[in-house]
Length: 106
Length: 106
Length: 106
Length: 106
Image (cartoon, rainbow over all chains, first blue to last red; front, side):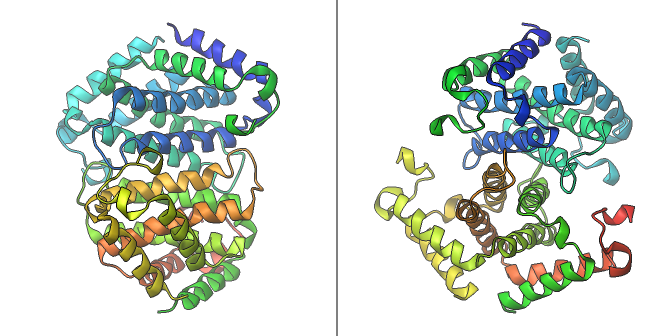
């Protein structure tokens, strides 16, 4: 499956239901947070929930991320690549290897 | 850019820094929530923040989503497609068109 | 210290800065989520962060909860007591003792 | 109602169910985030949800905040007062009046 295929399927899904009117960037950002918490809820009392349950919640987060990318008019893969370049500069390999400290404490 | 390219770049980034040890499914799920809130923070007092700022925060959410997909051993596009099929059944076009009600209130 | 004292101090703090204009219920609800994620960030990579750091982040969550109570016109202690009565009925002692299962799975 | 009364009621509620074993600081911090997202969900597609629905979700956030205060051994009102003093210094009245900018941009 290609990203463009799933993006197309999501756009059709939303258009058929006339839900674009609800999909302001702000509402989609709230939705990403709400779905992220449902993902986190899988781990509320355990570190080891069932993979299929976690995957289904992760899918909801990703879905709203893709819808928000669309609304912003950005390529979701490109923004990840761009941010990775920034993060790589903040966390040089030699000082960050094996450490979970934030860059401002390295 | 292909999804497989960015996935590869993320794996190299993590491996070079030996960060895989911190990337339990639970820690990644917490990270998705934390980054989602930073995305939401763009909209804390305004509905209209700068697109590049929002995109940079969205990129962080997507990054952790891709890392969690890897940890779970699932294809991020496939789980979105699978969930879309489930959601389509919960929200038939004829009853959900133009409505933001949850499926259990339609 | 009494709750009424800290509520009064918060109201003065907000009024002096003319920040009430930003404190819609929705903006305060977003703020509770944003601050909750900062609290969660203390635990992103460790289960044992410093207590004073955690307490300072918890204070931010509580602050926005008190401001939202004010905006809604509800007594924060009364709503906790009311909800506790509801929760007690959903989780009878005899079936929920020692279990972290949700009520619909008990 | 006094804070000490509701704190006592919460402690009895938890002890009767033997739930203290699940209430690590980390699990309670995750729970604060999860419940905050349920609060946010009231505002997912509308700025004007019913007050009693919002209050019930706010109560859940407050409940976990009080449980986390207990776990940390801190007074929830005192930490709010302490943080308010810090915030007052970061946001002097004369430069922050009427502005929703973060302190580092004032």
